[in-house]
Image (tube, rainbow over all chains, first blue to last red; front, side, top):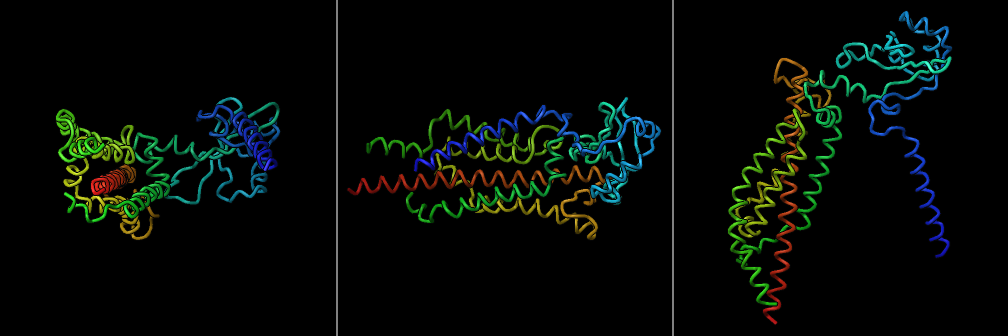
Length: 183
Length: 169
């Protein structure tokens, strides 16, 4: 009994330490422009001196395409074009196979100069919803188009959960038919 | 003990305070109008189906608090409410199915752009979202109301049974 409570205490302390560590590890939570919300590091690096000149001209470096292929990215996920945002930062575009929803090139990779290396990031999918959601759905409320359009399956499930709760309460607590005779 | 119980029982039978009754009778239509506003304007501003449905259900809760469960519950058709509980989910799922049917199987489930309400794909999506929000609102309203009504009926019944036993003893 004592062993169980002691190990439970240790477990709680361990979980608390883990939570604190994770909370410290998330930088600027809630900021849409912070790194984990905006882009994820793919741990692909290139030499700045060679690649930067190519990128500035709009040419995708060969080694980047090869690295991405090795990582298992699909054919239509490989970068097709590059655009410079500002000094030391580039966007790489892809041309998806699926034409109806992605009828133009999609912003997919983010290349950033850090020191004498170029690091490759992948944009989070939420960036697309934030930046193009209003044009795609004609709804100004970001919460609504996220909830009812992009995540419509999820909301259908939520509504079904509420419906199930209501049915359960009706089945368990419904008043018996003898009520009118009391009055 | 007995007198207190009978007093509360009478209060529930004949309704409560005159002021509370009058004010809530005046307030309920406005609360319901506001709930409809919240549901319909879910796309344009803050709001949506869940919030509007909860406000709509709260108006019925206010009715019960003011008039007592017997008076308010007799005016409230429970069978229709039970139908509304599933109607909202059916609207939601039906809008999703409509996308497949009206696009002749091209579109996925719940892809509102293919419902030909207007000429533009994007505006169809906005209108489809509105339809879905109405479905959510109906379900949430009916569920909130039915949970509250059933709980109050249950409590009323057990109080009546308890009181009856005491009288018999």
